[in-house]
Length: 310
Image 1: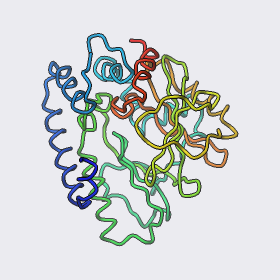
Image 2 (image 1 turned 90 degrees about the vertical axis):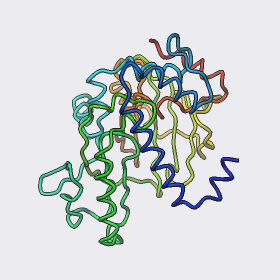
Image 3 (image 1 turned 180 degrees about the vertical axis):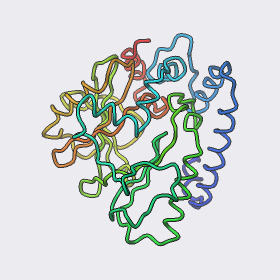
């Protein structure tokens, strides 16, 4: 029934509904006292997954991610969740050749007001981002096709994002709470109008799995593999599998990069891109999907949970 209602509802109505829903969530979560976080998270988890959350003795992969969001927050995690500041960490560990080039304007490479960005001085293709959460990306494939009104709309959206605290967007991802929001611009990357995303699941310094996302903005597909690129018998979320099970030729180099970046955190996801044999760092994520992307079959939720030592 939900899918049917979604199909027949106009997009502008859905966008308005989700905007109001998100605003209410932010207001509710940001007004919570810290002592209320555990009880709130239990209710939120039940609502989002249909499952009861055991925070006192978590067992499953999704339960333990909720525990980590509340009880394993430190300043370094906040720095590395910052998509701009994490670049310094990557540069120090593996070198800046793995960083997606940042586009600067008149010597400036970050902004706190989108209206200070002169689009006339940008290349025709780029990706404009905010640093303080997930989904704050605008991909520009043809700047020359943008009207004055379209550019104004983009800038208004960016400034709206800057005012948001992503920690309270759903599920208390507290590593984002103290990030100072800024805008920055990266070089545009693609492979055949797509950009496969290699997401490595790491636990206490050990790389265990990699999942591949393709078609993120068109026909989202995902497959989880072991480190020999053998398809695993479980799925994260309900996406259809990717169309190719072949690893990149320099997959061994990707593994070496991940081993150096993953540190000793109990659970971290290291994201990389691989464009024509060139490896680029994407991000470090400490609570993937806010920890509620369910595992199928269900038994693997508990199997994966054993990898997180708390």
